[in-house]
Amino acid sequence: MQNTVLILDFGSQYTQLIARRVRELNIYCEIYPYHHIPENLSDFKAVILSGSPFSTRAEDAPHPDLSDIKGKLPVLAVCYGAQYLAHFHGGSVEPSNIREYGRAKLSAIKADEPLFKDISEGTQVWMSHSDTIAELPTNGVRLASTKDVLNAAYRVEGEETYGIQFHPEVYHTTEGKQVLQNFLVTIAGVEQSWTPAAFVDTTVESLKEQIGDGKVVLGLSGGVDSTVAAILLHKAIGNNLYCIFVNNGLLRKNEFTDVLHQYKDMGLNVKGVDASARFLDALEGEKDPEAKRKAIGRVFIEVFDDEAHLVEDVDWLGQGTIYPDVIESVSVNGPSVTIKSHHNVGGLPDYMKLKVVEPLRMLFKDEVRRVGAEMGIDKKLLGRHPFPGPGLAIRILGDITAEKVRILQEVDHIFIQGLRDWNLYDSVWQAGAMLLPVQSVGVMGDERTYESVVALRAVESTDGMTADWVNLPYEFLQETSNHIINRVKGVNRVVYDISSKPPATIEWE
Ligand code: XMP
Picture 1: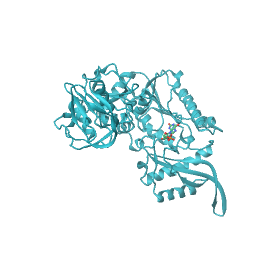
Picture 2: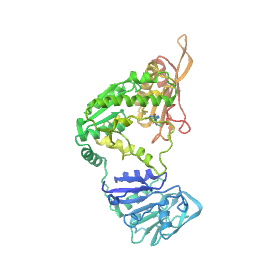
Picture 3: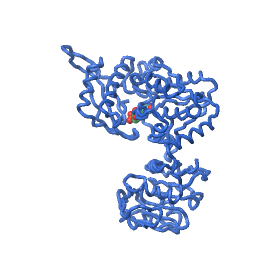
Picture 4: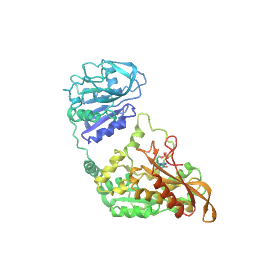
């Protein structure tokens, strides 16, 4: 894609944040690990070098050959990047006496420099490094300092090469976005034309070209990603997109019929397949969480495969993969250890031999939502909480029966509907109920009962990696608990989960 910015990742925890900030400026960018610099650099208008946990002086630190980049394309080198350029191009980097970490004020700013256009003297920046640039690279010109860091920013005379030791992508750098804009727009001349509407247009065009008259099968899950992927594909190839929505019997109450209708109303060519019995059979007597996930993953692939074979001459599999998964799999450090095996809908069995098309593989989650809104997808659907692929199976602790599923569906429905009625749904990132393998004593009328306990869980989070429990109003919890106990036969006790992640997780299994 033309007008693209290349972000070279040296392994910083902030690299994804750089990408998000760039995209917030309506500029398209892609992250590449430092050891996979793209061969064809002509697509890129500018390059940003990220930070890194390494010291550039260490032998095993990232030391890529930047000779096709430095001096040829506009470069903004951040933190490690800035030190790397100094270290290998005539300057020097030394350990700093104090660890430069946290907020600092940028001073002695050269106001007439385009990098600092509209940046105020004394502006707050975020530092995070233990090395410092003692001498600037050859032809280096100092552009700003802080109290502890003399060479906080520099440029190289005769090139469009800039180095900054602070992190413009972090919110604590108050005018960081302006610095990025100055570099990308004023210095590198990149256009700010990457909007959701532009994304839809270019993606639909390229999908048309890629797929032609081919047929695509895609598994819909009711979630945001698969839905947005389906609508994009549908715009490109119409009814040559065959969507399959599988009821695994572990969805929320009424979810299968409601969502299926919604999909049909959107004009999608979708087939609903009720395979509840097949899933319940495969889960019978199974108590172990990982074994449950594996069984569900296996049956899903079998069902999907049977259905896909009914579509004649299909050659593509559509998937709702998004950018964080892609970056994860090619990142500097390789895929991180998965703590739970996540079996997302749409896994590709090898023997299907289909080509894969992933229209969202370059988007972050919030961008997927914006693209969805641009295409007119219902707000309620786009704002839905995440829901795990194995569904209620991992919220019923222990073995699963049809009766337990029914009980949990009722409880979950009361809880979620309550959140909507109390206008709390949108301020919660994810919510659900767990059916515990515990019976407790209660009284109902004159009788002693011995029935199930359910736990309610509502968390706030941005990506599910960390989460905290939500401080829901007592009155709401009181009303919800009453409704559940009065209306759901088989439950006589409700508790609320007040654990954060880590050390707990969001799901209980
Ligand atoms: P945990 O429980 O690991 O959950 O804190 C983090 C996020 O992942 C979802 N989750 C899953 N999603 N298949 C999925 O598609 C799974 O097996 C699975 N397990 C957990 C969970 O709902 C939360 O959003």
